[in-house]
Length: 147
Ligand SMILES: [Zn+2]
Ligand SMILES: [Zn+2]
Image (tube, rainbow, N blue to C red; front, side, top):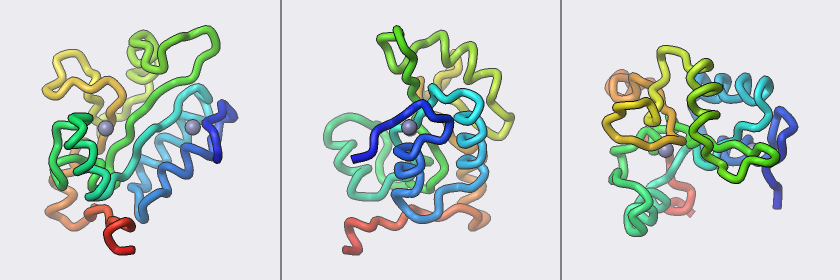
């Protein structure tokens, strides 16, 4: 079992990003660059298949139904940090001071003050719904269903 480590290129994070085929390259490259400069940042969820989305919905851990979340299109990441002496893995100051300085205009962060669906750890491709209609991003193929 691999664990998250502040190495600047965390293998556990890469495993999560590669869990389903075809994670969005632009978002992946952004995260890898951010982590190389801020080794404390990690991801807990990247792509998300149908079975996983529906089980989260049953547990009320998400509001989104299957195909209604950017995670279902390999186009979102949930972030957390591991900082020595910091009890929370979601310290508001980190998101405010570090994340906001590293957010390009093509990423939407749900922790933004006034966010429609407030969710501190969640970042996604801003135009993911447009990218679907253009066929540039595709539904995550659910390895658990196909197996
Ligand atoms: Zn990690
Ligand atoms: Zn999310």
